[in-house]
Image (cartoon, rainbow, N blue to C red; front, top):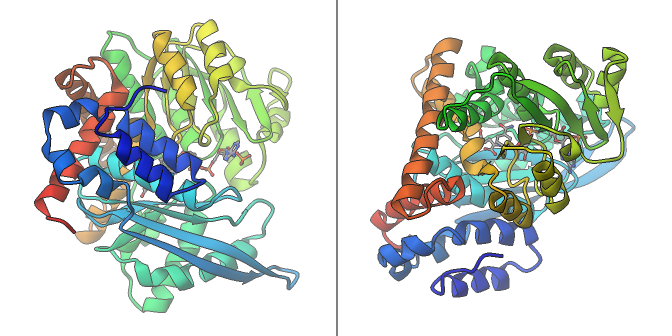
Length: 449
Ligand code: NDP
Ligand code: 2IT
């Protein structure tokens, strides 16, 4: 672990004391605090105003029961969460995750990250996150609908375009957003498009939102490559995951001239030396709700499926973890370094363990953190909110241009901020400091609230 500035040690200790057992939340807070030493030294007002302590405490945490009935008539009870972390810059904004691993600590880590990510976009959005320990795997459409309706029957009272605006995350895509938005509309009797993002194109959604996180991730890496005079042309890329973020990251890498040779799910990974066939992967994942093992079977003999083992053992130029938190550990980092990987960029939220991140940086691998790299998803959500507010809808080309411009802006702001605070080239320090200062300055202006 890196050493924390002495002014920040008591703040981190307070976080540990007040939030026992929430390992992922501790990890996310520590990772930000490790970058803030030079900031509190240069600007004592941040320590004097307790702004960092206030940032570590969510404005509001909502936990609720979600009862629902299976197709066979059994009653299930899940737990729902929404952590409204910080609204200094705008309404709470962030996704909903449905996965059996979801608990309060996971939602708090994601909500905390979201504050700084949203701040980095430069758009008027605060930070929040939510979800449930519901597992959509193997559930029928009708079961997923009943769960979503029950979830929204409680959550709706906390939402609104000026209050809190959820979107998708792991296990929550267009189908789930539809069921939840439908229930919100029914309960409130209001067509408030700006209350959720990730909506379908015919009912208030934005072009490019589906693709935005993956595309934005690749736009960010393209800027990293351009900064050293390089490009995606001829690069071998490995992408973990095979969900929303992974699929559109793969598509954009191919459009820019690279080749994605492997992707994965929790059951293993596939290696496709000719490049992952995105249309086939989409068919398997979106239409059949299937596994990457089926992709391998359908694609034929040149593709292998590996059930045990690590995708990070594959030789590549660029690695993109796009599945889940802490999926890239020290073993994975050492394998990537050994095989000559030059760039690791986080498409998922906090996919790299702190020790793995340090190993990569020490070995000279260029490492870019999630809150900068994957901000294109939430940024395009903010563009969806803009279109909803003006009852307008933009073309695909215009929206994609806006996304690319936002990612360029985030990339440049990270490097400029890293320079300003004496850590040239550090995307981690640049993202944390630039994200922090914007939200902290807004909190100072708004008084002790
Ligand atoms: P999806 O549900 O579409 O896909 C998730 C993928 O990750 C699946 O391939 C899934 O495999 C795999 N995965 C999930 N949990 C685990 C686990 N515990 N172990 C191994 N594999 C796992 O989610 P998204 O693509 O939307 O999200 C992926 C990551 O990107 C998350 O970290 C999310 O927070 C982040 N993100 C998403 C954004 C968005 O707009 N959707 C925006 C910014 C970040 P399996 O099917 O086997 O579970
Ligand atoms: O982690 C994230 O940034 C998201 N899941 C997207 C949030 C959003 O509101 O679009």
